[in-house]
Length: 346
Image 1 (tube, helix red, strand yellow):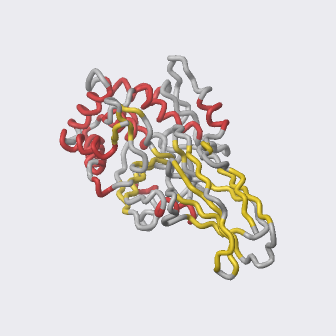
Image 2 (cartoon, one colour):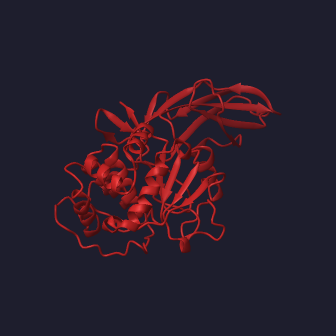
Image 3 (cartoon, rainbow, N blue to C red):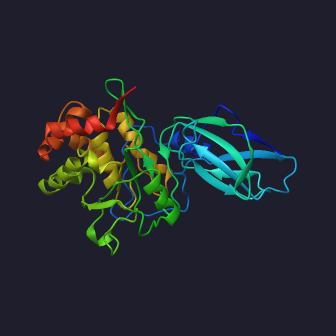
């Protein structure tokens, strides 16, 4: 018998951003005009439309010859050509298609293997494909929403934010309850060590533990936007950024309820600290528009007031973030550790 691989074709470049994401992002408000909020960030409401998901890759193949002795067929998927620790997807002999998503690496290799009572009787050629680097890099966790890697964004000094270190998104255990497969993916593929929960204690699950297996839950309930400049909030933001300076906490998942407002405020300050330009900080904030939540725009009153309050701390986003965090009790040494952990040269 023979197994012929069809798609993705060898050396293909696969784009995981659905067309609708491009269309929606290209139609965000572009005029410098303040939009009154129209929502309560402490009680986010959801729509039925969720576009915060990556595209699926469709694997297809053809079997030829005598299949009577075939008992099992598996698709092997690996991020290395030697197929060390591959993902193995068992399929039925009559199946000719498999859809997969949540690719965490830039290059993959795949092949099909046919078995007869656990003995390999046929193996296809090996095909490879690369994953196009589009922003943001979303992940699909059924039941939850707005889950993305903050990596890939350009920073000062010809650097980029590292992938695979810090993820943001919605909560996973209440209104947006992640399924077991999604939580297993976050444990085994994203390798989340720390679940940084920004919700009020009354919003946490009864167990007061992370739904991500083996992850440590750290709850630091905070406010968002221009409310972060009081002494009590500065103390909490100081705790967050001290936590972010500790390498043992990574990879880290940060969330509130929606992963939009409190999470968006923390990530905005973090990106400023990493030397990301303000337009790119605001664009990353606006990616939440692709999730089930209402409009989040750089021109909305909440975000505008936050930006104006932050401008008091200096002339550039980087200096503003540094001075704000100094007022929160975060040292220059701790800020340098964060940059060391989350930035890489291009």
